[in-house]
Length: 114
Ligand code: 5GP
Ligand code: ZN
Image (cartoon, rainbow, N blue to C red; front, side, top):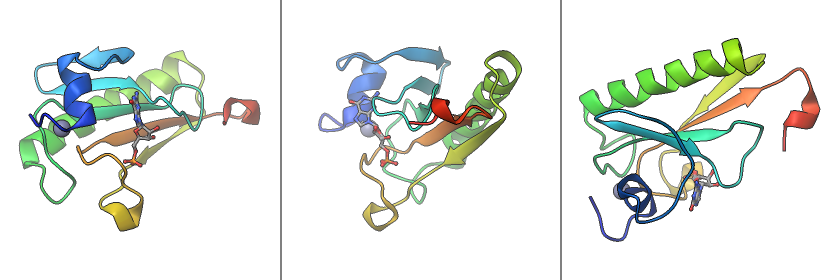
């Protein structure tokens, strides 16, 4: 937990977010600037800066949570495919330094892209 971290604030509820799914170690919420309908972020509740730092157990839990959400997007919300994305480091476009996976549903209907 870092007092300065935006996503730690979201995990603890200090900063509002749209909760999609949650378990003991992970939290999933809607991205504020979505690339498509249903674009969301999955984070570990425990703060890790990035892919290089996150412990294996948290990486596994976040990845499995992202897989559950991707399956739901395809089976229940009509997604034709899903992009799973992580940016690690500022030079790889990471802007929030609390590890997160983007889950970006993709559709046959391109008007669902933003
Ligand atoms: P990155 O560029 O680090 O891979 O992704 C950061 C993501 O966090 C971006 O897609 C951005 O839209 C999202 N984001 C930034 N600030 C907030 C916020 O306050 N709330 C939510 N829900 N998403 C945010
Ligand atoms: Zn954090």
